[in-house]
Structure formats: C-alpha cells, structure tokens
Amino acid sequence: MNPRKLPLLIFVLLLFWGCVPKPKAELLLQPSDKGPEGYLKSGVEGVYQNKSLKIAASIIRVADGGPALIGELLDKKYVIIRLDIENRSAAKVIYNPTHTVLTNDALDYRKPLDYTDLYDIKGEKGEAELSQLRGRFYDLTVTLLPGERSSRLLIFEPMSKDVKKAELTIKEIYVGTDTTRVAFPFEAKEGI
Image (tube, rainbow, N blue to C red):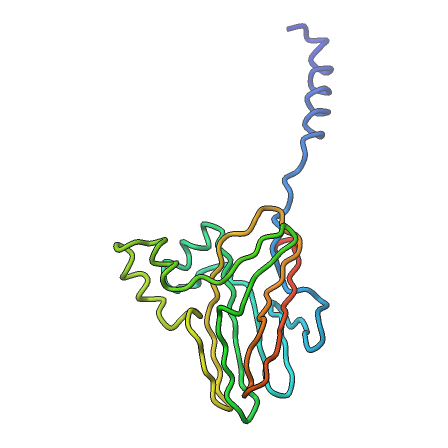
C-alpha cells in the first residue's frame, strides 16, 4: 500500500466510524407522572387512593431471589406487576383479577394469567415450580376484611415491541356493594 494514501484511509475509516449509530438505551415502562383522579406516582409505583382503598402497582424487572419461574418469565419478556391492595373501609373489599386488563398503544389487550395458563406454559414437569407460586400471584378472587392488605403479582403475556404507553385497568373492585374503577398509566422511559 502506498504510504501517502494511509492518512486518507484513516480519515475515511474514522468518518464512517463516527456515522455508526449508537445503540439506543432500553426503554422501560414506568408509572406515568400524571393519571386519573386519585392517582399519583410514588417512586417506582403508581398509587391510587381514596377513603376506602389504597392500591399500588409496580412493574417487576428482576426475580430478586423469588421462584425461578419468575426469572424465566421475565427473561421471556412477560410483564409482571406487583399489586398491593389495602382495605381502608369498614366493608369487605373484593378483588377479582378477571376484571383486570393491561392495554397499550400497540393495541395489545392482555388479561392476567391464572394457574391453568402457567401450567400450560410449564407442563407437568413444572409442577414443583408452579407450587412455589401458589399464593404469590393473583389468579383467584381475594376478599379483604377492614384493615387487611394483599400483595401479589399479576402476570401478563409479553407485549408488542416498541410500546410507548400502557395502562393497567381494574374495571371493578368491590368495596361492600359499590364498585370502583382504577387505572394505572405507564409510559416508556429510558432504563435506569
């Protein structure tokens, strides 16, 4: 190679190297700063509260020493949300997870998985792993007496790629004979 052309070659290589796009930072769904009446963002949680209820929702990102199945589902991009419910009323609170849905701007409509859905994913060989999840996720109706709390997981199938906004909606949760609709907005923000 001609030594005179070496600086030109280096210049061309540096020029193209500078044009290589930098990888995008991962966008993660996090609670929105604004939401419907009764909603507020508190750290990594979206919180809804009124005189009868306090409900907090946060997206789980790591298994943190929990059952191995949680880590496996997270690796496969399942959406796992911790939902904390506190009964502040003098009546019973009844939460049925079948009245809950996760939607997004990609028009996904996801219902929470129940034990049968997880069994279909794991099969008979996964029964031991599934037994570790019993009582740790919402799959059946939960009744809370006055002053009681519940903290469990909601598990949803993976969402479409490039989702910018999502909403967890509890279409109805009973406080005595009254129903309340609760929504938790989430938006994509750069990962921490």
